[in-house]
Amino acid sequence: VDFPIDRLDLSPYVLGPKDPEAPPIYKLFGVSEHTGTTANSGHYTATVRNSEDGNWYRHNDSAVGTTSGDAAMTGGAYLLFYQRAKGSMRWAGMEKQILLEEQRKRDGGGPNGSVAAAVEDADGFREVTNKKKKKKPFS
Image 1 (cartoon, rainbow, N blue to C red):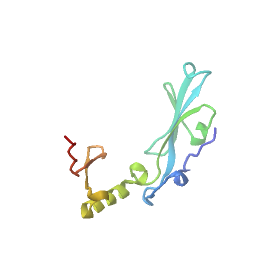
Image 2 (tube, rainbow, N blue to C red):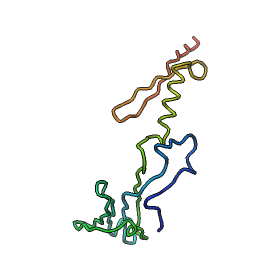
Image 3 (cartoon, one colour):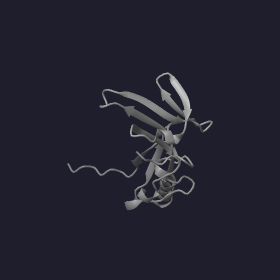
Image 4 (tube, rainbow, N blue to C red):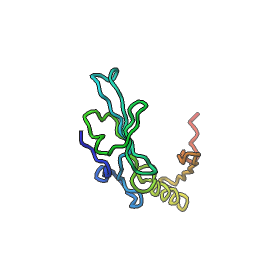
């Protein structure tokens, strides 16, 4: 199995605006590996990069040892874990675009004169509700 360790570039696959401060380029920080004939039997191990020292470690039950990211490139690689290499934008870099759209709606209204209000929760997610009055059903 071959996969990028330091530069998984998804730029060609992202539609819409891309934030240069948080490009869709990712670095590998963990690999879950499986050995055995089926997912129900066999043995799982993990190779992970420490976020503080940048070193790679192999975890096998209670044994932990140093290794390299290349050592995780085996036929047993089962799950790959990536994180954005630069920036911390959510929504694949769309947050700036969302904020610009909200500002545009506040300044002049959106399509059909509707105005949207966004409420952000503790995790930074927004629930968008439409403030346009609903039409009463015919009676």
